[in-house]
Image (cartoon, rainbow over all chains, first blue to last red; front, side, top):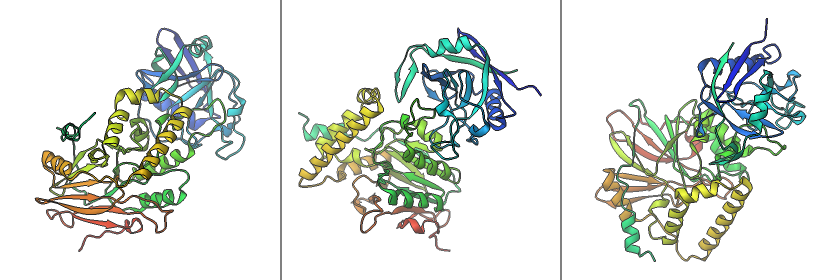
Length: 168
Length: 289
Protein backbone atom coordinates (compact mmCIF):
# COMPACT_ATOMS: atom_id res chain seq x y z
CA UNK A 1 0.00 0.00 0.00
CA UNK A 2 1.40 3.39 -0.95
CA UNK A 3 2.09 5.83 1.85
CA UNK A 4 -0.51 8.59 2.17
CA UNK A 5 0.43 12.02 0.88
CA UNK A 6 -0.73 15.44 2.04
CA UNK A 7 -0.39 18.76 0.26
CA UNK A 8 0.13 21.92 2.25
CA UNK A 9 -0.90 24.88 0.10
CA UNK A 10 1.15 27.82 1.36
CA UNK A 11 -0.24 31.27 0.60
CA UNK A 12 1.87 32.99 -2.10
CA UNK A 13 4.61 30.35 -1.90
CA UNK A 14 3.25 27.16 -3.39
CA UNK A 15 2.68 23.56 -2.38
CA UNK A 16 4.68 21.42 0.04
CA UNK A 17 3.90 17.72 -0.37
CA UNK A 18 4.37 15.47 2.63
CA UNK A 19 4.57 11.68 2.42
CA UNK A 20 3.44 10.05 5.66
CA UNK A 21 5.03 6.84 6.90
CA UNK A 22 1.89 4.92 7.85
CA UNK A 23 3.99 1.81 8.34
CA UNK A 24 6.48 3.11 10.89
CA UNK A 25 4.28 5.83 12.45
CA UNK A 26 0.72 4.52 12.13
CA UNK A 27 -0.79 6.49 15.02
CA UNK A 28 0.90 9.78 14.12
CA UNK A 29 0.05 9.41 10.44
CA UNK A 30 -3.58 8.56 11.18
CA UNK A 31 -3.81 11.43 13.70
CA UNK A 32 -2.36 13.89 11.22
CA UNK A 33 -4.71 12.73 8.45
CA UNK A 34 -7.64 13.13 10.82
CA UNK A 35 -6.80 16.78 11.38
CA UNK A 36 -6.23 17.27 7.64
CA UNK A 37 -9.59 15.76 6.75
CA UNK A 38 -11.38 17.83 9.40
CA UNK A 39 -9.91 20.97 7.86
CA UNK A 40 -8.08 21.77 11.09
CA UNK A 41 -4.94 22.96 9.27
CA UNK A 42 -6.83 25.19 6.84
CA UNK A 43 -6.04 28.85 7.47
CA UNK A 44 -3.36 28.15 10.07
CA UNK A 45 0.13 29.61 10.22
CA UNK A 46 3.69 28.46 10.70
CA UNK A 47 3.89 30.26 14.05
CA UNK A 48 7.38 29.27 15.12
CA UNK A 49 10.30 29.50 12.72
CA UNK A 50 13.90 28.99 13.78
CA UNK A 51 16.42 28.88 10.89
CA UNK A 52 18.81 25.97 11.03
CA UNK A 53 16.41 24.15 13.35
CA UNK A 54 12.76 23.76 12.35
CA UNK A 55 9.54 25.42 11.21
CA UNK A 56 6.47 24.63 13.30
CA UNK A 57 2.77 24.96 12.63
CA UNK A 58 -0.66 23.43 13.01
CA UNK A 59 -1.80 25.25 16.11
CA UNK A 60 -2.70 28.85 15.37
CA UNK A 61 -4.83 30.89 12.99
CA UNK A 62 -3.46 34.17 11.62
CA UNK A 63 -3.25 36.66 14.49
CA UNK A 64 -1.94 33.92 16.79
CA UNK A 65 -5.39 32.72 17.71
CA UNK A 66 -4.89 29.27 19.20
CA UNK A 67 -6.98 26.44 17.80
CA UNK A 68 -8.61 23.75 19.92
CA UNK A 69 -7.03 20.36 19.40
CA UNK A 70 -7.99 16.81 20.23
CA UNK A 71 -6.76 13.99 22.44
CA UNK A 72 -3.00 13.57 22.75
CA UNK A 73 -1.42 10.60 20.98
CA UNK A 74 1.23 8.08 21.96
CA UNK A 75 4.75 9.14 21.10
CA UNK A 76 6.11 7.00 18.25
CA UNK A 77 9.64 8.43 18.28
CA UNK A 78 11.02 4.94 18.96
CA UNK A 79 10.12 3.88 15.41
CA UNK A 80 13.65 4.23 14.08
CA UNK A 81 12.93 7.30 11.93
CA UNK A 82 15.41 10.13 12.46
CA UNK A 83 14.84 13.88 12.70
CA UNK A 84 16.77 14.58 9.51
CA UNK A 85 16.42 17.58 7.25
CA UNK A 86 12.96 17.85 5.66
CA UNK A 87 11.38 15.17 7.83
CA UNK A 88 8.12 16.08 9.58
CA UNK A 89 7.57 15.30 13.26
CA UNK A 90 4.96 15.85 15.97
CA UNK A 91 5.43 18.80 18.33
CA UNK A 92 4.71 18.25 22.02
CA UNK A 93 5.31 19.72 25.48
CA UNK A 94 7.62 18.22 28.11
CA UNK A 95 5.16 15.37 28.56
CA UNK A 96 6.37 12.73 26.05
CA UNK A 97 2.80 11.74 25.08
CA UNK A 98 1.27 15.18 24.72
CA UNK A 99 1.33 15.66 20.93
CA UNK A 100 -2.00 16.67 19.40
CA UNK A 101 -2.13 18.75 16.19
CA UNK A 102 1.08 20.78 16.03
CA UNK A 103 3.89 19.49 13.85
CA UNK A 104 7.24 20.72 12.64
CA UNK A 105 9.47 20.26 9.61
CA UNK A 106 13.16 19.83 10.43
CA UNK A 107 15.32 22.21 8.42
CA UNK A 108 18.55 20.68 9.62
CA UNK A 109 19.70 17.27 10.85
CA UNK A 110 18.42 17.42 14.44
CA UNK A 111 19.83 14.20 15.86
CA UNK A 112 19.33 15.40 19.44
CA UNK A 113 15.55 15.20 18.86
CA UNK A 114 15.74 11.46 18.20
CA UNK A 115 14.51 8.88 20.67
CA UNK A 116 17.28 7.66 22.95
CA UNK A 117 15.42 6.23 25.97
CA UNK A 118 11.81 5.81 27.12
CA UNK A 119 12.06 8.52 29.80
CA UNK A 120 11.06 12.22 29.73
CA UNK A 121 14.60 13.31 28.84
CA UNK A 122 15.18 10.74 26.12
CA UNK A 123 11.79 10.18 24.47
CA UNK A 124 12.44 12.45 21.55
CA UNK A 125 10.07 13.76 18.89
CA UNK A 126 8.18 11.38 16.62
CA UNK A 127 9.02 11.61 12.92
CA UNK A 128 6.03 10.46 10.85
CA UNK A 129 6.86 11.57 7.33
CA UNK A 130 8.99 13.74 5.05
CA UNK A 131 8.77 16.45 2.45
CA UNK A 132 8.79 14.82 -1.01
CA UNK A 133 8.15 18.00 -2.98
CA UNK A 134 8.52 21.68 -2.18
CA UNK A 135 11.71 21.68 -0.09
CA UNK A 136 12.54 25.02 -1.72
CA UNK A 137 9.34 26.42 -0.17
CA UNK A 138 10.39 25.10 3.23
CA UNK A 139 13.72 26.90 2.66
CA UNK A 140 11.88 30.16 2.00
CA UNK A 141 9.74 29.77 5.12
CA UNK A 142 12.75 29.17 7.37
CA UNK A 143 14.29 32.44 6.15
CA UNK A 144 11.41 34.82 6.97
CA UNK A 145 11.83 37.64 9.47
CA UNK A 146 10.57 36.71 12.94
CA UNK A 147 9.89 38.45 16.24
CA UNK A 148 7.95 38.31 19.48
CA UNK A 149 4.12 38.34 19.41
CA UNK A 150 2.40 38.33 22.80
CA UNK A 151 3.45 35.18 24.61
CA UNK A 152 5.37 33.76 21.66
CA UNK A 153 8.91 34.02 20.30
CA UNK A 154 10.21 33.33 16.76
CA UNK A 155 6.89 34.25 15.17
CA UNK A 156 7.03 35.28 11.50
CA UNK A 157 6.43 39.00 11.23
CA UNK A 158 4.29 38.43 8.14
CA UNK A 159 1.98 35.44 8.53
CA UNK A 160 3.04 32.29 6.65
CA UNK A 161 -0.38 30.80 6.03
CA UNK A 162 -1.35 27.25 5.17
CA UNK A 163 -4.41 28.04 3.06
CA UNK A 164 -5.42 24.43 3.07
CA UNK A 165 -4.08 20.97 3.74
CA UNK A 166 -5.37 18.26 1.41
CA UNK A 167 -5.00 14.49 1.59
CA UNK A 168 -4.26 13.05 -1.83
CA UNK B 1 -1.56 62.58 43.98
CA UNK B 2 -4.66 60.42 44.06
CA UNK B 3 -6.91 61.28 47.02
CA UNK B 4 -8.59 58.50 48.93
CA UNK B 5 -12.00 59.80 47.84
CA UNK B 6 -11.28 60.02 44.16
CA UNK B 7 -9.68 56.60 44.37
CA UNK B 8 -12.90 55.28 45.85
CA UNK B 9 -14.97 56.95 43.17
CA UNK B 10 -12.81 55.20 40.60
CA UNK B 11 -13.64 51.83 42.13
CA UNK B 12 -17.34 52.10 41.31
CA UNK B 13 -18.96 48.71 40.81
CA UNK B 14 -18.39 47.30 37.34
CA UNK B 15 -21.58 47.89 35.34
CA UNK B 16 -22.05 44.47 33.78
CA UNK B 17 -20.08 41.69 35.43
CA UNK B 18 -20.17 38.29 33.80
CA UNK B 19 -23.17 36.20 34.81
CA UNK B 20 -22.88 32.47 35.07
CA UNK B 21 -25.97 30.29 35.20
CA UNK B 22 -25.26 26.66 35.90
CA UNK B 23 -27.05 23.52 34.71
CA UNK B 24 -30.12 22.75 36.84
CA UNK B 25 -28.73 19.30 37.58
CA UNK B 26 -25.82 20.70 39.57
CA UNK B 27 -26.16 20.05 43.28
CA UNK B 28 -22.69 20.78 44.59
CA UNK B 29 -20.03 23.34 43.70
CA UNK B 30 -16.62 23.83 45.32
CA UNK B 31 -14.60 27.03 45.71
CA UNK B 32 -10.87 27.16 46.30
CA UNK B 33 -8.26 29.91 45.91
CA UNK B 34 -4.75 31.02 46.86
CA UNK B 35 -2.96 27.70 46.43
CA UNK B 36 0.18 29.51 45.22
CA UNK B 37 1.37 26.32 43.52
CA UNK B 38 5.09 26.27 42.86
CA UNK B 39 7.76 23.59 42.28
CA UNK B 40 9.26 24.20 45.73
CA UNK B 41 6.04 23.22 47.51
CA UNK B 42 5.47 19.56 46.70
CA UNK B 43 3.08 19.02 49.65
CA UNK B 44 0.48 21.55 48.51
CA UNK B 45 0.68 20.36 44.91
CA UNK B 46 0.09 16.73 45.99
CA UNK B 47 -2.81 17.56 48.31
CA UNK B 48 -4.38 19.78 45.67
CA UNK B 49 -3.91 17.12 43.01
CA UNK B 50 -5.60 14.50 45.25
CA UNK B 51 -8.48 16.85 46.00
CA UNK B 52 -9.04 17.62 42.29
CA UNK B 53 -9.19 13.90 41.52
CA UNK B 54 -11.52 12.87 44.33
CA UNK B 55 -14.01 15.70 44.81
CA UNK B 56 -17.61 14.80 44.09
CA UNK B 57 -18.50 18.39 43.20
CA UNK B 58 -20.23 19.11 39.90
CA UNK B 59 -17.89 22.06 39.41
CA UNK B 60 -14.77 23.56 40.93
CA UNK B 61 -14.28 27.33 41.00
CA UNK B 62 -10.67 28.46 41.43
CA UNK B 63 -10.85 32.10 42.51
CA UNK B 64 -7.30 33.22 41.74
CA UNK B 65 -3.68 32.68 42.76
CA UNK B 66 -3.71 29.03 41.73
CA UNK B 67 -0.09 29.68 40.83
CA UNK B 68 2.52 31.45 42.95
CA UNK B 69 3.61 33.18 39.78
CA UNK B 70 2.84 33.09 36.04
CA UNK B 71 4.91 35.00 33.53
CA UNK B 72 3.36 33.79 30.32
CA UNK B 73 1.83 30.79 28.59
CA UNK B 74 4.89 30.33 26.43
CA UNK B 75 6.67 28.64 29.33
CA UNK B 76 4.86 25.51 28.25
CA UNK B 77 4.14 25.99 24.57
CA UNK B 78 4.50 22.77 22.58
CA UNK B 79 7.46 22.30 20.34
CA UNK B 80 11.02 21.11 20.32
CA UNK B 81 13.58 23.46 21.82
CA UNK B 82 16.82 24.18 20.00
CA UNK B 83 18.64 23.25 23.17
CA UNK B 84 17.72 20.63 25.70
CA UNK B 85 16.28 22.91 28.39
CA UNK B 86 13.20 21.38 30.05
CA UNK B 87 9.89 23.12 29.30
CA UNK B 88 8.41 24.05 32.67
CA UNK B 89 7.74 20.51 33.96
CA UNK B 90 5.91 21.82 37.03
CA UNK B 91 3.40 23.90 35.10
CA UNK B 92 2.83 20.91 32.84
CA UNK B 93 2.15 18.73 35.87
CA UNK B 94 -0.47 21.24 37.02
CA UNK B 95 -1.92 21.34 33.50
CA UNK B 96 -2.22 17.53 33.56
CA UNK B 97 -4.16 17.61 36.83
CA UNK B 98 -6.50 20.26 35.42
CA UNK B 99 -6.97 18.37 32.15
CA UNK B 100 -7.79 15.13 33.96
CA UNK B 101 -10.23 16.90 36.27
CA UNK B 102 -12.10 18.61 33.44
CA UNK B 103 -12.86 15.19 31.98
CA UNK B 104 -15.07 14.53 35.02
CA UNK B 105 -16.43 17.91 36.05
CA UNK B 106 -16.37 21.58 35.13
CA UNK B 107 -13.47 23.71 36.28
CA UNK B 108 -13.60 27.51 36.27
CA UNK B 109 -10.61 29.79 36.79
CA UNK B 110 -10.47 33.45 37.78
CA UNK B 111 -7.22 35.44 37.64
CA UNK B 112 -5.56 36.41 40.91
CA UNK B 113 -2.95 39.08 41.50
CA UNK B 114 -0.17 36.49 41.03
CA UNK B 115 -1.47 34.64 38.01
CA UNK B 116 -3.36 37.27 36.02
CA UNK B 117 -1.20 36.45 33.00
CA UNK B 118 -2.54 32.92 32.66
CA UNK B 119 -3.78 32.96 29.09
CA UNK B 120 -6.77 31.50 27.31
CA UNK B 121 -4.42 29.22 25.34
CA UNK B 122 -3.26 27.48 28.50
CA UNK B 123 -6.79 27.26 29.92
CA UNK B 124 -8.19 25.90 26.68
CA UNK B 125 -5.56 23.16 26.61
CA UNK B 126 -6.67 22.11 30.07
CA UNK B 127 -10.40 22.39 29.36
CA UNK B 128 -10.75 25.08 32.03
CA UNK B 129 -13.19 27.99 31.59
CA UNK B 130 -12.13 31.54 32.37
CA UNK B 131 -14.25 33.73 34.63
CA UNK B 132 -13.92 37.49 34.76
CA UNK B 133 -13.41 39.25 38.09
CA UNK B 134 -15.97 39.83 39.44
CA UNK B 135 -18.54 37.35 38.23
CA UNK B 136 -22.08 36.63 39.38
CA UNK B 137 -22.96 32.98 39.87
CA UNK B 138 -26.62 32.02 39.84
CA UNK B 139 -26.97 28.85 41.89
CA UNK B 140 -29.82 27.60 44.04
CA UNK B 141 -32.03 30.61 43.30
CA UNK B 142 -29.41 32.93 44.76
CA UNK B 143 -26.83 35.23 43.26
CA UNK B 144 -23.29 34.80 44.50
CA UNK B 145 -20.71 37.44 43.68
CA UNK B 146 -17.33 35.86 43.02
CA UNK B 147 -14.05 37.80 43.09
CA UNK B 148 -10.39 37.18 43.83
CA UNK B 149 -10.60 40.07 46.29
CA UNK B 150 -7.56 42.23 45.55
CA UNK B 151 -9.61 44.72 43.53
CA UNK B 152 -11.59 45.57 46.66
CA UNK B 153 -8.68 46.35 48.99
CA UNK B 154 -9.34 50.06 48.50
CA UNK B 155 -7.46 51.26 51.57
CA UNK B 156 -4.23 49.83 50.22
CA UNK B 157 -3.78 52.81 47.89
CA UNK B 158 -0.22 51.80 46.91
CA UNK B 159 -1.42 48.39 45.83
CA UNK B 160 -4.47 49.79 43.98
CA UNK B 161 -2.15 52.07 42.02
CA UNK B 162 0.22 49.19 41.30
CA UNK B 163 -2.72 47.02 40.23
CA UNK B 164 -3.96 49.68 37.80
CA UNK B 165 -0.48 49.76 36.27
CA UNK B 166 0.19 46.05 35.84
CA UNK B 167 -3.33 45.25 34.58
CA UNK B 168 -3.12 47.87 31.84
CA UNK B 169 -2.76 46.52 28.28
CA UNK B 170 0.29 48.74 27.71
CA UNK B 171 2.18 47.35 30.70
CA UNK B 172 1.13 43.78 29.92
CA UNK B 173 2.26 44.06 26.30
CA UNK B 174 5.62 45.53 27.29
CA UNK B 175 6.11 42.81 29.88
CA UNK B 176 5.26 39.99 27.49
CA UNK B 177 7.54 41.46 24.84
CA UNK B 178 10.51 40.50 26.98
CA UNK B 179 12.21 37.13 27.04
CA UNK B 180 11.11 34.45 29.49
CA UNK B 181 14.37 34.89 31.42
CA UNK B 182 13.81 38.65 31.75
CA UNK B 183 10.18 38.20 32.78
CA UNK B 184 11.10 35.70 35.51
CA UNK B 185 13.68 38.18 36.82
CA UNK B 186 11.16 41.04 36.84
CA UNK B 187 8.61 38.85 38.63
CA UNK B 188 11.20 37.92 41.28
CA UNK B 189 12.05 41.57 41.76
CA UNK B 190 8.41 42.63 42.13
CA UNK B 191 7.88 39.79 44.61
CA UNK B 192 10.85 40.92 46.73
CA UNK B 193 9.63 44.52 46.81
CA UNK B 194 6.17 43.38 47.84
CA UNK B 195 7.57 41.24 50.65
CA UNK B 196 9.72 44.11 51.95
CA UNK B 197 6.78 46.49 51.85
CA UNK B 198 4.57 44.01 53.73
CA UNK B 199 7.24 43.44 56.37
CA UNK B 200 7.45 47.22 56.92
CA UNK B 201 3.67 47.65 57.24
CA UNK B 202 2.00 47.89 60.63
CA UNK B 203 -1.44 46.78 59.45
CA UNK B 204 -2.81 44.62 56.74
CA UNK B 205 -5.55 45.71 54.37
CA UNK B 206 -8.82 43.82 54.18
CA UNK B 207 -11.50 44.04 51.53
CA UNK B 208 -13.35 47.33 51.94
CA UNK B 209 -16.80 46.80 53.47
CA UNK B 210 -18.37 49.73 51.62
CA UNK B 211 -16.89 48.40 48.40
CA UNK B 212 -18.26 44.94 49.09
CA UNK B 213 -21.74 46.36 49.81
CA UNK B 214 -21.57 48.52 46.68
CA UNK B 215 -20.64 45.60 44.45
CA UNK B 216 -23.29 43.37 46.02
CA UNK B 217 -25.94 46.06 45.58
CA UNK B 218 -24.98 46.79 42.00
CA UNK B 219 -25.13 43.10 41.08
CA UNK B 220 -28.19 42.29 43.22
CA UNK B 221 -26.22 39.55 44.96
CA UNK B 222 -26.40 38.60 48.61
CA UNK B 223 -23.05 36.94 49.18
CA UNK B 224 -19.55 38.00 48.15
CA UNK B 225 -17.16 35.04 47.96
CA UNK B 226 -13.47 35.87 47.64
CA UNK B 227 -9.90 34.93 48.54
CA UNK B 228 -6.64 36.90 48.40
CA UNK B 229 -6.40 38.00 52.06
CA UNK B 230 -5.75 34.49 53.41
CA UNK B 231 -8.07 35.32 56.33
CA UNK B 232 -10.90 32.78 56.12
CA UNK B 233 -13.97 34.07 57.90
CA UNK B 234 -17.65 34.79 57.38
CA UNK B 235 -18.53 38.49 57.66
CA UNK B 236 -22.01 39.88 58.17
CA UNK B 237 -22.28 43.11 56.16
CA UNK B 238 -25.79 43.92 57.39
CA UNK B 239 -29.03 44.08 55.37
CA UNK B 240 -28.82 40.34 54.72
CA UNK B 241 -25.49 40.68 52.93
CA UNK B 242 -22.48 38.50 53.65
CA UNK B 243 -18.80 38.37 52.78
CA UNK B 244 -17.23 34.92 52.86
CA UNK B 245 -13.47 34.64 52.64
CA UNK B 246 -11.74 31.50 51.37
CA UNK B 247 -8.70 30.01 53.04
CA UNK B 248 -5.35 29.83 51.34
CA UNK B 249 -3.54 26.50 51.03
CA UNK B 250 -0.13 25.73 52.48
CA UNK B 251 0.29 22.03 53.12
CA UNK B 252 3.92 22.47 54.10
CA UNK B 253 2.95 24.77 56.96
CA UNK B 254 2.49 23.58 60.53
CA UNK B 255 -0.41 23.27 61.02
CA UNK B 256 -1.19 22.55 57.40
CA UNK B 257 -3.79 24.83 55.77
CA UNK B 258 -6.14 23.68 53.05
CA UNK B 259 -9.87 24.16 52.81
CA UNK B 260 -12.68 23.92 50.32
CA UNK B 261 -15.79 26.09 50.50
CA UNK B 262 -18.69 23.96 49.31
CA UNK B 263 -22.14 25.12 48.24
CA UNK B 264 -24.69 22.35 48.28
CA UNK B 265 -28.37 22.20 47.32
CA UNK B 266 -29.92 19.65 49.72
CA UNK B 267 -33.02 19.39 47.60
CA UNK B 268 -34.14 21.31 44.54
CA UNK B 269 -35.96 24.41 45.70
CA UNK B 270 -34.15 24.50 49.03
CA UNK B 271 -31.62 27.19 49.79
CA UNK B 272 -27.98 26.38 49.20
CA UNK B 273 -26.01 25.43 52.28
CA UNK B 274 -22.39 26.42 52.46
CA UNK B 275 -19.75 24.74 54.54
CA UNK B 276 -16.00 24.73 54.83
CA UNK B 277 -14.66 21.24 54.35
CA UNK B 278 -11.25 19.63 54.51
CA UNK B 279 -10.07 18.57 51.04
CA UNK B 280 -9.76 14.94 52.14
CA UNK B 281 -13.52 14.90 52.83
CA UNK B 282 -14.46 16.36 49.45
CA UNK B 283 -15.33 12.95 48.00
CA UNK B 284 -18.27 12.69 50.38
CA UNK B 285 -21.54 14.52 50.06
CA UNK B 286 -22.75 16.43 53.08
CA UNK B 287 -26.36 16.82 52.05
CA UNK B 288 -28.75 15.38 54.65
CA UNK B 289 -30.99 12.61 53.38
